[in-house]
Structure formats: structure tokens, C-alpha cells
Image (tube, rainbow, N blue to C red):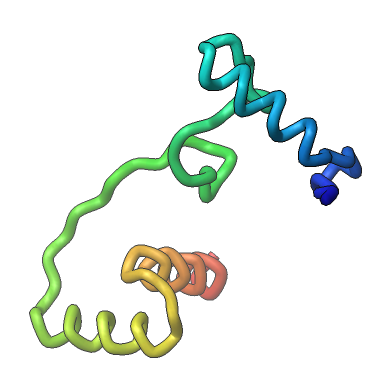
Length: 88
């Protein structure tokens, strides 16, 4: 059986067996650089902002965010972006 990677490399069962053997004996070097965690959302540093709003607004944001399939943070980022554009 063969497996084609995203870069077009073809790996066979023999390749996987060899990698498994190397992994088991501690000599496997991996498949490249591994970056832990989720990918960055932005190319610049992020900072946390904290502010107080009425609970009813938080509940409304949670409901809309859930319905749209986005996080509360993404909802707030979009709202801020819209205001910056509108008032900019």
C-alpha cells in the first residue's frame, strides 16, 4: 500500500515499517520540525484585553457566537474591526 504526502512524496508500507523500527529503537529523527500548539491567528503579537459588560450582553454574544460557529473572542475581534473601519 502507498500513501502520498502533501508535498507529493510517496511512502510505502516498507517506509512506515522502517520509521516504526527507528522510533522503537530511539533513532527516529521525525518527519521535520514540529510546532506545538495551534497556529497563530495573526502575524503580530497578541495582547489580552479585559473589560466589563452586562451579563445579558455576554449571554447574547455567546448565543450568536455559538450559532455562527465562532468563539467569543472572534466575535469581539470582528466587532472591533467593524467599528475601526466605520469610525476610521
